[in-house]
Amino acid sequence: MNPIRKPFRYRYDNTALYLIGINILVYVMQRINPSLTSYLALNPVNIIRHHFYWQFVTYMFAHGGLSHILFNMLALFMFGAQVERRMGSREFLVYYMSAGILAGVLSFVIYWVTGAYGVFLLGASGALFAVQLAYATLFPDAVIYLWGLLPLKAPVMVLGFTALELFSSVTGFRSGVAHLTHLAGFAFGWVYFLVRFGANPWKYLRGK
Image (cartoon, rainbow, N blue to C red; front, side, top):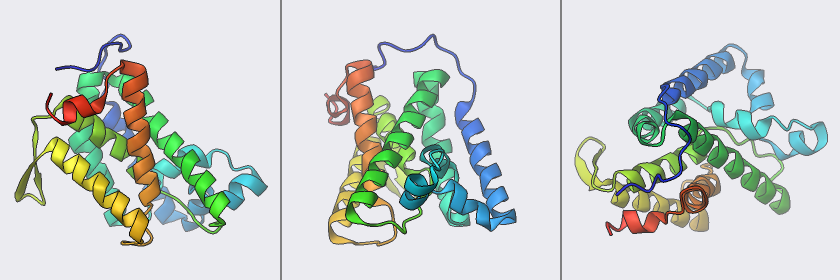
């Protein structure tokens, strides 16, 4: 089964690796100049009062620490490269950036409406949740070894992580993690499949 029915003309340019390189470069720049983070991370006050509109894009490439970028880039390498090969580089880039930007926009709206003006959102996780959804949709029979030990089919892993994020967003479990941004990335990735490909991921996630 292949839900990719209306792609751009196929080409493969190792876009996932370029994205990893950009993320690493930005992280190094953050380490050299920590004040740069406040210009890159998505903050409602900076966007509304100072018109830092670029933050809807740059927040995706800034990270809060070594473990943060390490796990995100590992996920982008493991899942993103395979999704890119199936989608093609142009489609993958549009998918990745669209999900990440829209997840940032929705997070911004929620932060502003709820008065969370001091939040600085950063990290590629919103886009990566969309990438993981795409991986499970395109490779529903793939087996992922969680923590290198526990074998899980890709759909089980993705839906399990999503359920955990939903639980965490409701209960406040693991506070400080952008659960809503993760869920938004997953949701926008789902909508992308419906609109762009005319394919419902649920059909592939449940193996039918």
